[in-house]
Length: 246
Image 1 (spheres, rainbow, N blue to C red):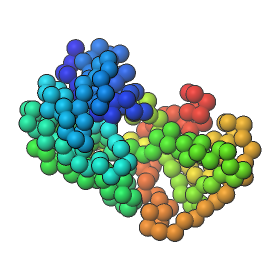
Image 2: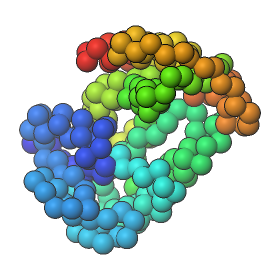
Image 3: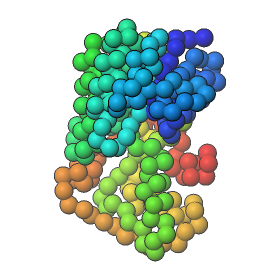
Image 4: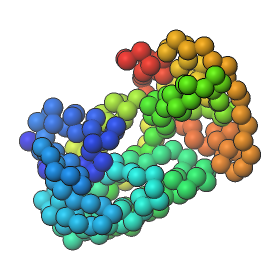
């Protein structure tokens, strides 16, 4: 039995995969949640309600929670403050490749959350990854009822398996604090159009793919490859293997 671990966002796509891995290994893992349930501790990162009790006793806190609502920075600040009062837990944070260069508000929030971790005075580890297979598939899935599916012209992605990221996070949670560890990226750099056509083929859909080239700094950064890490193509599962359930 290892050190007690608390996972924020433990019911989400990545968090739940991480929790399963650690529990299968016999680890003492709790999930921070706003609602009670088996293996959960009740607490709210946004309001701080129950947060002091939730972090108490945790030797490792893996921060996977994200809201996409602009509240991620405050939620991380609240977590760090309560963790600091509780002792010296090891903070492990999942982040995204290229957040300094792609001026999305969500990425800016992730960068600020990293800063809060680094300046917390607590031991920390940060892992950045490229986009998950699930996200790339979701972009197409949301359009599947349309006769035309849009893909970003000139934009490439390097999607990675959530399960592989969960494996790496599980390793980091069980190891000593390591600071910023090497980025983790999927096995293939592919155009968004190519990935969109792979989704259509795997789902037996016949749709016209419309190549869009939106203006603006975000898409210029994406077209420049700021979201890629070709020298860190350590993932093994391809997009087609993900789509087939592999």
